[in-house]
Amino acid sequence: MELNTTYLGIALPHPLMVGAGPLGDDIDVVRQLEDAGAAAIVLRSLYEEEIKGEQIAAFLHSESHGDSSAEAGSYFPDPESALGPEEYLEHLRRVKAAVDIPVLGSLNGTTPGGWLSYARLLEQAGADALELNIYHAASDPTMSAAEVERQAVDIVREVKRELRIPVAVKLSPLLTAFAHFAGQLDAAGADGLVLFTRFHNVDIDVYELEVVRTMQLSNSSDLQLRLRGTAALAGRVKASLAITGGAHTALDVIKATMVGANVTQMVSALLRNGPGHLRTVRDDLKAWLEENEWNSLGEMRGNMSLARVPDPAAYERENFRMMLRSQAIPS
Image (cartoon, rainbow, N blue to C red):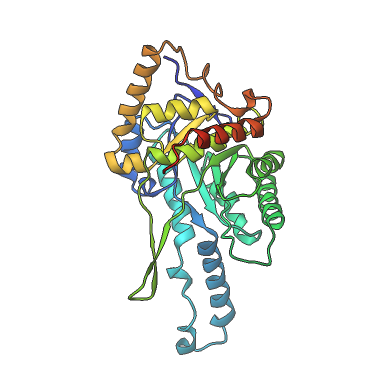
């Protein structure tokens, strides 16, 4: 069974990648993931706020150090303690030295600015590609959807101008005209699109008057939104497509491939079952293909995408209408 695929122009033996998250934090775990057959790994994101915090700390230190007393200087951030971004770069170097599989760095931010210079530093540290997570918290009532999209496209263009390595953009599902925006990113030079960012859950502690944030592991039901989004883009953009969130089984990978995904990123399934789960899913994938008389993943890729439908919008609306008509109406 041929499982090979290409993502961001990188040839991979199969589509099972390790997505951005804590699995890449420990070198020994990364080695275990490679031994279990991971095709590639995305390190957890380095955030715009962390980079800006370090830059501000360094600026304040340099501005205050010469003319301030030791006592006054102690009020300013110590640049030696603001090593998050530098530690990230060093960790990336160590991961690259430890394994042979492609290693992707990840940046998370929303605004143009100096923090984007870290994209070049990630490339210099050895990243095989960059995953750019442009997450905008839509809480500013003065900022229009068009401005949010324009700003994101500008970020992608700026990063692409700076880098030689491929750049994938991780998308949020909370977009007004998702397919149009994806097309803009594709035209701006994005080499890949990753569907979708998973958000933390927000609740209210009514006794302590606090906002409570939690992040639960995904399950296969979370895949459905990703399938729909990928099906809408496959065959319509040049960029590679990746699904992240909700992929736990070989059948999930089959579905992702059928709607057009080039790779399937896994995180929750590996946190729950361990690195060896990659081997299980790959073996199950081969068995399913053989049982159902498919010779490769490539020949099924995109066969369930909306590109095969003349009028996708009408098709989706008709399916929605028929689904509602088929629902039993309670008396």
